[in-house]
Length: 206
Image (cartoon, rainbow, N blue to C red; front, top):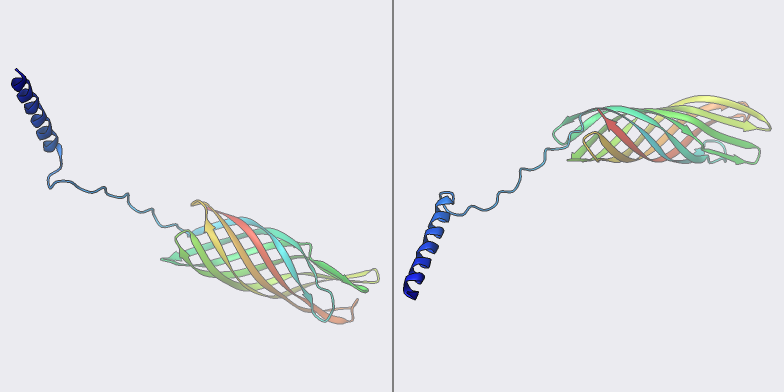
C-alpha cells in the first residue's frame, strides 16, 4: 500500500515539473532585461526666470567700493545640437550696491546685460560660458549733490545649470561687469564701475 501511494505521488511530481518546463520560453532561462535608458534632457527652447545674488566692486578714479544684494529677472532661448547648447540671454537687475568714502558716495541702482551663452550638456547638467553687452546706472553724490549717469560696457562669466524637471532648472552664475567711465561734475573726474556678481536663479522652460 505504501509503495502504491509513493508511486502515485512521484508520478504527480513528475507531471507538475514537466508542465512547468513546458511553460518556459524556448532556449531555456533568459536573464532579466533592464528597462530602456531615460531619454536625454532637452535644453532647447525659450525660458524665463528670476535670480538673486551679491554684487561687489570698485569705482574707477574714486576710493569707493560699492557692494550689496542684487536681484532681477532673465529671459533667453537655447539651441541644442547633441551635447552642445548655445543661445542668448538678457536680464535686468535692481541692486543695493553702494559705498561711502569721505565726502563721496557711489551706488549702482540698476543694470542689465545682453549676452550670448555656449556650453556643454551632460544630460540634465549644463556647463557654460557667457559674455556680451552690459549697461546700467551709476549715481555719484558729494556734499548733498547727486548726479546720475547711464553707462555702457561689457560682461563675461561662466555658470552651471541643472535641470530639475523638463520645465524647471536651477543655476549658479558668476559675471564680471565693466561699466565704462563717464564724467561726473560732483567728483570732477571720469568714473565707472568694475564689479563682480555671484547669483543663483531658477528658470521655467516652455
